Image (cartoon, rainbow, N blue to C red; front, top):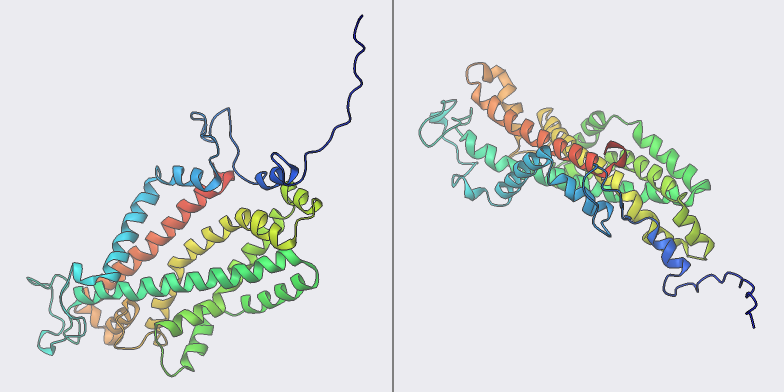
Length: 330
């Protein structure tokens, strides 16, 4: 007897939270997928499960700009933490008898107007610049990312209020704000400068974070998670933030170099760090007083070179990270 064809059974969706369920599908939509045709550079097949971050690190290791900038930054961090590795002199030990003397044996960069060793002050000045740059960048990224992310995720009246507050702070010139804000403070330490940069530097990160969150929350995997009943906290932490944090990291990395230059600019204008804090900007400002650098250009050249290389290294690092994390530039 011939068997009768069975009628097709209606499709039963897998249980939520079970193996291969719709929730797992929604959670994995935003993660890196396997490209059987090959990687984005047209090379061999991409390894299974490689995420955006592992793929970015794969590209960064082969980028000479990233390698050069990374080595220079590692060197700056090392001498910032342990300046005694390359100098044992005291940057505050000065001898007026050696004022404006040029380089000599054991004193490669010569002496400044107060008779302080320029080489020692350049080495110890790295700690101030790196501390200001890193701490200000972390504060700006946290504050701006939080406010901008909430504005983009909540929308409505929250977005309108936070966006208008961002516009107000965006309209304040940061150098002019530094002249007003820091001139009213009695003691201008490293942390005072960091607090000022965070106060006026967060709007840029906030705008980037807002746009990234608004774009990420429109993706299919977020809409699927919302349709399956995921809470706002779960969607924000598990789906939106991991896919919106890349633009914030790129912007913050590039901004780190500009914050170091901003600290030097404020010190040069006389409203930044005060003695006895050793700062490249303060040394450049001191070299400009009375045009002393005309007779002794070394007191201006070496701090300026150190500042320029540091800012350039962090900007190069930010450009390399941007190229690695932006799929449109692949």
